[in-house]
Each structure stands twice: as C-alpha cells, then as structure tokens.
Amino acid sequence: MKIAIILGTRPEIIKMSPIIRELEKRNSNYFILHTGQHYSYNLDQVFFDQLKLPRPKYNLRVGSGTHAEETGKMLIGIEKILLKEKPDIILVEGDTNTVLAGALAATKLNILVGHVEAGLRSFDREMPEEINRTLTDHISDFLFAPTEKAKQNLLKEGIPSEKIFVTGNTIVDAVYQNLKLSNIQFNTLNDLDINSDDYFLVTVHRQENVDNKERFQGILDGLKLVHEELDIPIIFPIHPRTKKRMKQFNLKPEGLTLIDPIDYLSFLQLESKAKLILTDSGGVQEEACILRVPCVTLRYNTERPETIEVGANVLAGTDPNEIVEKVKFMLNKKRDWNNPFGDGKAGKRIVKILLG
Ligand code: UD1
Ligand code: UDP
Image (cartoon, rainbow, N blue to C red; front, side, top):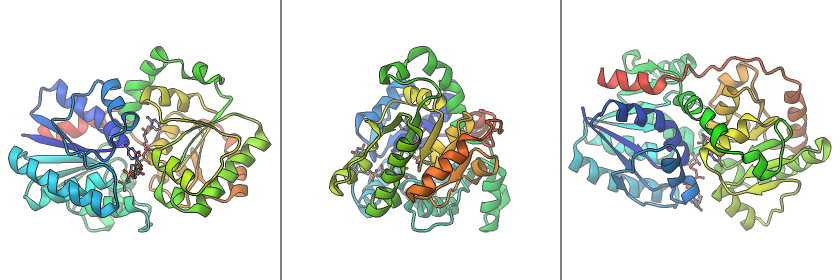
C-alpha cells in the first residue's frame, strides 16, 4: 500500500511525526507532501531537523493568504501530485486548511482518505478549524478518533462505526518520545533566566482571538493583571499571526516576556516546568493535560472537553477579570488527573490498522 502523508503546519508536523517514524521503521512505501502553509524556519523546518524526519518529497510552497487562496492553491497542487504518484491512501492530521485541501483533492480522485484526530468538535462554526475538521471527517474512509468521546461525535453525525477507530492521540506519542530528549539536550529555563515552577507560559494565535481587536486587547489586559497580582514571569512565544495583528492594532503588551516561536524540545521543556499554562492552542491544551500542568484556555469553547472533564483545564474566554479568576482557581488544583488521550502508541496503532 502506498501512503501519501499530507501536512503543512507546525502542529501537523509534530502530530504526524510518530506515524512517520513508524512508517520509516517498517520501511513502508510512503512519501510526504508539504503544502507550504507554514514556511518560516521556526514554524516548519526546525521540526523536521529536530525530530529527524525525512524531507518532504514535494513542497507546494502555497504560503499565506485568505482561506480560499490557501485552500484553492493547495487543491490544484495536491491534485497534480496525487495524479502522478497514485497513492492508495492519503493521511491528514487535524483541522487546518491543509487538511481540508488534502482530503478533498484525494476523495475526488477516488483515493482513500485517513483522518488522524477525527471527531473533535467545538460546535462553533465561526472557527475555520471546525469547518475543516467536520468536512474532512465526512469525506474520510478511515477516521482515527483520539478518544471515545470523539467517536461518539462522529456516530451522532451518522458516520458508520466500521470507519471509526479509537486510537489515542499521536500527541501523547510525541510528548513521550521527546520529553526526555528535551531535558537532556536543552536548558531553556536557564537561557530565559527563569526557574522551574516559577513562571507561566502563554500561547495565543487563534483567528477568533487575535484578528478581533477587542478580544485580543482583553487577553493582553488579563495577562497584565495576572502579572500584577501574582508577580510571576510570563513567557509568551509569539506566533507570526499574533505578532502581525499586535502591530496592526497597535497593541502594547505589558508584563510579558515575548520571544519568537521556539523549537519543539525547548517548548516541551517550558511546558513541563511551568506553574501554569494559558493558551488558545489545541495542541497546547492537550500537552498541558498530558504533562499534568494546569491550563487556562483563553476561549469560550474547546474541542478538547476531555481536558476539562479530568480537571486539567478551564475555559476563561477573553475577559481580563475572568482570566485572573480562572488562573487563581487552577493554581489551587491538585495535579493528579489521568491523561485521557491514550498510551503513547497511537502512531503504531494507526499504521497497523492501515498496513496490518
Ligand atoms: C493555522 C491553522 C490553525 C492552526 C495554526 C497552527 C488554518 C485555517 N489555521 O493558523 O488552525 O492552529 O495554523 O499554528 O489552517 N505566517 C508566517 N510564517 C509562516 C506561516 C504564517 O509569518 O510560516 C503568518 C502570515 O502572516 C500569515 C499568518 O501567519 O498570514 C497566518 O498563517 P495561516 O497559515 O493562514 O494561519 P495560522 O494562524 O498559522
Ligand atoms: N509549539 C512549539 N513551539 C512554540 C509553540 C508551540 O513547538 O513556540 C508546539 C506545541 O508543543 C504543540 C504545537 O506546537 O505541539 C501546537 O501548535 P499550535 O499551537 O500552533 O496549533 P494548534 O494546536 O492550536 O492547532
């Protein structure tokens, strides 16, 4: 069986890495097609280098644009390559424009589609990710749901149970495979002059937050209040979308240590030793939960409700006072929850389902 791995952004590279490693180990017939949705070194190549992944055979270099521009260019480029390579199945991971374009191009050519991390739902159609993941699920042939809850979401939408496989989330594999390495190879805390369990880590990049001036301002005001009341360093690796909007809206963050986006091993170390994490990222909510670091989510919903159910995460939205209250609440949490996302063998399981 010939497999095409289609990816294009930071979280897809990280979450596909356990599957790619497994395919390499088995000497399987596969290739990587990169759409080029992410292209800055620290959002893209750094992960291939650090995780020792093979170079993509193709890179479409679509770059940034509106949703239609990105998705349209990807569709045209992906179709050409699929026609040439004739894979039996394509694999996509998550909910980005790359995922929708990959799944759509393949299904129209009658090529099987496998969706890794299927069945997540925020039930908020204003998020581009919700559209991407829902449409992709409905045109997929193999739906690799990370949890039982994700499977139930799919069943409720009428997707036949024979297509759904509960595998765990490959992010657990990625954390387990890389955490030890990160502590051996890096001393990120030293470099930033901070101490273990004595700083907060922040990431914010979602369109609904940073493209909306009031919401973005609310988050920055909330972080400033947290800094004033709790007097603790707040480290914020800033996503390029966020940086761009901050400049455009002329917002001035206060009380934060802004740094460029960093490599995965350093970021894992920052997460694992943080006193608390504030984020609107999907992957970061999961990693905080896996690493038993309390999380405050700067959104009004989450497609990762398992993190809230086990007590690892709360929703704060973007109101400054609510952010401070939720931070104080989570600081009192006992870190004794169990990781709901699997045993770290999701990548192996997925490859086994496909290749036997
Ligand atoms: C995308 C995904 C989002 C995911 C995120 C992961 C969609 C709809 N959104 O959002 O779900 O959580 O990736 O990080 O697919 N830019 C750079 N360098 C890059 C890439 C982007 O500077 O390598 C800047 C550009 O100004 C660009 C902006 O970031 O316009 C947004 O990039 P885009 O890929 O459209 O969306 P993300 O916000 O990265
Ligand atoms: N990440 C990283 N460096 C950073 C910020 C995040 O390596 O500076 C990793 C993080 O560990 C997680 C992934 O990027 O695995 C999450 O990606 P992102 O937040 O961009 O996207 P989302 O998960 O929200 O789609």
